[in-house]
Length: 226
Image (cartoon, rainbow, N blue to C red; front, side, top):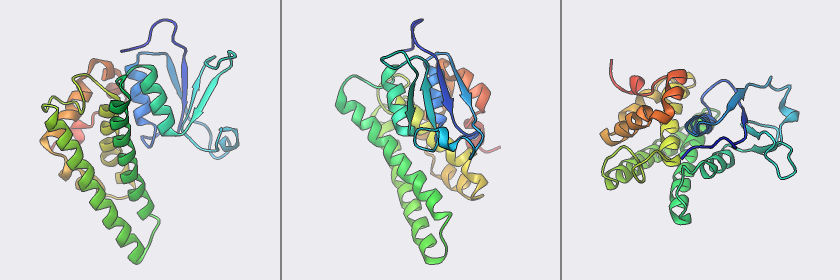
């Protein structure tokens, strides 16, 4: 479900890269609301952010007193947008299942980037953690997709927060993290099962996200062999 004419406009502040804002970009685009993205000068603008980091969401005139509603933390922003625009179900247990999946994906991302700063045995051990966690999350994705009839959605039959979050997860590694580790893209692509590829295709072909894919590029073209 998308917004109506009374929906406020939004500003998403983040760096000009995939990072931790891709799911929020997808949610805003799919909701068909008016929104823009700002790329603050960094670190000059750091003191002007609520917690000194990005992403930050600004909902214009969205607070109870008519002032701007400002929200930080990628997970909080995603959950707020997913609930606001009904990309999660109303049942709290079903919502929790989608949100725990997102949090598990974040754990994998954190494991990858943390090992980049390590050396010797500590790096080797953390890299092992990342490899194990990557295996587990792709197994979970595949199992959920099969249980849901391999329809290209993790839950239900329509585009959901979980679908967009999983898509952004794979996009981060295949189209962004390779800037830090040239091998990680191939590693992740090798883990993509036919079910996960179907999810990626389904998300990209959803009419609500045509604009996003056209602007940000297709993940499918990076996954499939040339």
